[in-house]
Amino acid sequence: MEFCVEDSTDVHVLIEDHRIVFSCQNADGVELYNEIEFYAKVNSKDSQDKRSGRSITCFVRKWKENVAWPRLTKEDIKPVWLSVDFDNWRDWEGDEEAELAQVEHYAELLKKVSTKKPPPAMDDLDDDSDSADATSN
Image 1 (cartoon, helix red, strand yellow):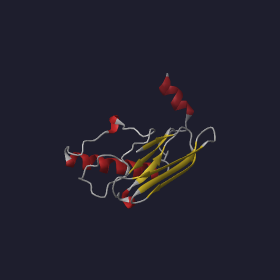
Image 2: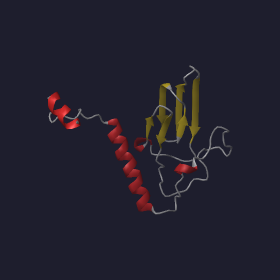
Image 3: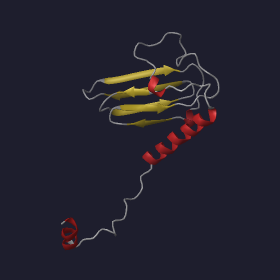
Image 4: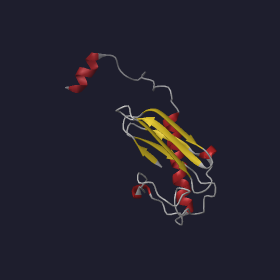
């Protein structure tokens, strides 16, 4: 699930077993708030969010993974601002092993993004400006 808000500030995402609450301020200082009650229970402990300059992406894992939902929301009425991103659409009846590998890959990417490592050592860089001039000619 993706909330597209460029240059957002004061972002708050709360993923619970039956709902998600999202709030932030956009670049103009307008406060935005969305609360979605899910169609069925999700695994809030195994769900997470990631913020970029243009959007906030929420990775929400269903409690029963191999059960299709007819819709995202509990209510049968779809909010006008909610739409399907067919670029990221996955068919739940597809190859489950490939889907699991893709989910694990995304989880690893999120870990790498959220875990800061020390900067690389620069011991092998040559400080001699004469040798740099000689190799560039």
